[in-house]
Length: 172
Image (cartoon, rainbow, N blue to C red; front, side):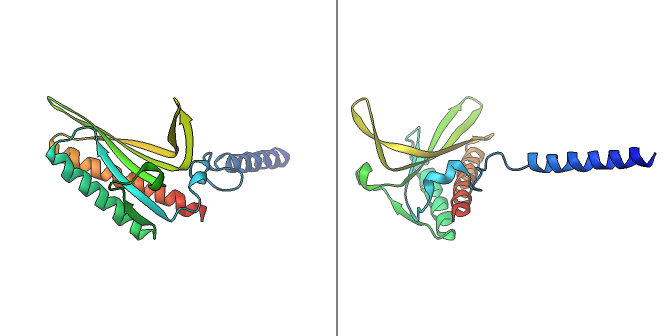
């Protein structure tokens, strides 16, 4: 009976050890860093651009509020935000952009919030130089009215920026 108890205990210990190895974060590389953030190593400044799929006057206020929230989160992380205003794409890298794709209709208040980072590397696509995208993430915002949708969009944008900054901090 003791040999069975000992065998059972040894088996449980072995299973627990294997389960402990299996619970390691699958998004981490063997070197201990997340590969999705590896291309962002050493970034201390970002140019910021916020766009919306519709150009209504109310959306201008939304873009400004999203940009302000992004700048606040970056300043808290000691990353310098800069504005894109009138600069060519080559001069505005790394470019952190948030695109808000609105889907509004009768009883529909949805939006996709997409954060992307483009860096100095250019690639040729259709015989045109295009900035390479080194990071992208998206979240969906839903509301029951225009005001709740705007609140949700700002919250999703802030979450995306916080995830990006947390990933950059793990590289340091």
